[in-house]
Length: 161
Image (cartoon, rainbow, N blue to C red; front, top):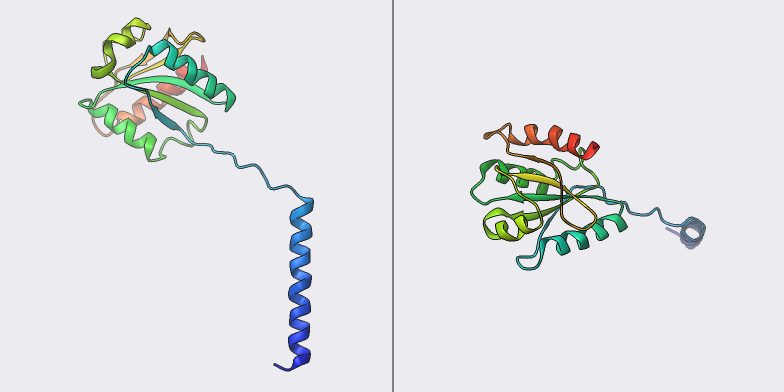
């Protein structure tokens, strides 16, 4: 390439650079919106109502819905649901849902103190503003491959109330 071609190429590159810079100065970047289901592990110690109250505050700030989720390591449907949630399989159905996860075996006494009681796991419960159980909950599920498909519409219905 001759010197004339190199100068034209250099001028073109500078013009493109100025155009890009000007464009980026006049239009603010679009905000990043994170829309996916979150599963947050509850601390292993502390009063459940206080933990839930703090999580409710954080969820409200982020315009998310909080559900108290109680599962167990030995619960096969809980494992399937947890894997689906962590793997993003439920993001489109529950894009603004945060699940505060407690372990039934570890947390049973302190869950009961806050009113989160169920006969079956998993338990999905809506909390009150003070962090205690509202009584609005679903519990138990079928085993096997259909567990997540069974939970999702029931959870959606719970959230609609």
